Image 1 (cartoon, rainbow, N blue to C red):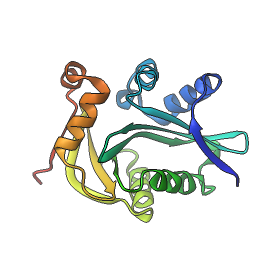
Image 2 (tube, rainbow, N blue to C red):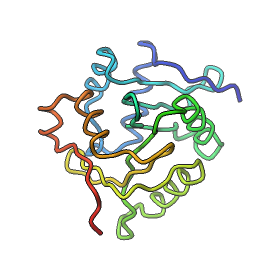
Image 3 (cartoon, rainbow, N blue to C red):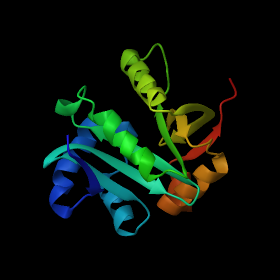
Length: 183
């Protein structure tokens, strides 16, 4: 495996958009044009993972001074179960060493149709060193659990990142916030 991770080129955007749309449910996706626009404004980074010339995955990150939000992370369907997910995420962890790297993921709701998938994803992140945080994230009406590596990300850090990415008005419109789970 000769894995490379680099910024998405214009010629790769169509394939990345296809992966994005197949990997994430519609209610969890921001419009793709918005992701690209934030990259152009240097408010986010859209990365492409390849094995030689074969597209294997994508990552969309919002970078801050102390924390980095792995907003979207996906491996192509035909590349799953081959070790690519671990290798690419390990590279991202190295890339952001010295800063807290965090993500939001589906809650571990045992009544969900895809509960076994959710458990597998959770175990995957744990194996790579991520730890559960007691905070939840609400984005577009969907509630997510949070995990981090390199330290716990605070609601203030999340708020700062999302404000720099989305702007105050958009952030409020879509209810983007992190808060302590009171369970």
